[in-house]
Amino acid sequence: MNTLKIVSYNIHKGMSPLNRLVKLDGMANALATLAPDVLCLQEVQGQNLKRAMAFNEYPTQSQHAWFGEYLQLGDSYGKNAEYEHGHHGNAVLSRFALDPKHNVNITVSRLEKRGVLHCEILPHGWGVPVVVLCAHLNLLEKDRAKQYQAIRKYIACEIDERAPLILAGDFNDWAKKSTDCLAGLGLVEVFECVQGAHPATFPAKLPLLSLDRIYVRNLAVHDVAVHSGAPWSDLSDHLPISAVVGLV
Image 1 (cartoon, helix red, strand yellow):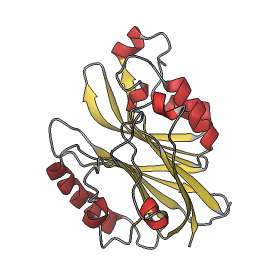
Image 2: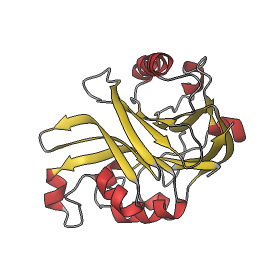
Image 3: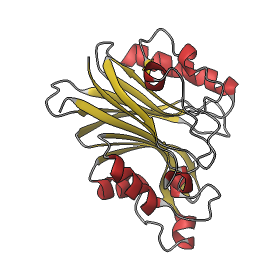
């Protein structure tokens, strides 16, 4: 195994953009065609009793476990927001041995509960674990500025600077400031590296804003893609992004 395919996707809790239809089957089928080795998901519903009662096709198990079974990937979940009828957060799924480490609370507003899920994977033949951080940041720029600082501190203090590192997720970075805010950590944003610009990923039907990111460290970027058009435009409100990377 010389390369890894990383996919990052905000699944909008498995629902269509207006929350009228359950789209989990379509999402899983589409993700299977991408054959990800590492899958970073945001807005993953750990439980939603209301939707389970309202929709016959809504799974009774957590969505991270459901995707894991469907795609035959190991899964880990970090709960960020909890409410009376359920909870949601981020998930990391992997084709390789998956070691959950920590869910980092980066909440800075009572209106938005956010986190960074830290896992490690061991790709076949690599001989070195890869750190995977799956993140979801706030909508407001002033909140994101604080969250970038929290992420910077966590990476600087908790992650071996020699370790291969993936930081992926929904950054809500419409202002395109994430790279400057994370400068000094040795991170490379994969689309900036290959294409010189971030792709538009939101809204899925007519993408105008570039919200989603994949950063890597101590990894070479071989290819990148934003997955648009059918069927993606009729699934979540975000488009998924992917990158193929290998050891430096």
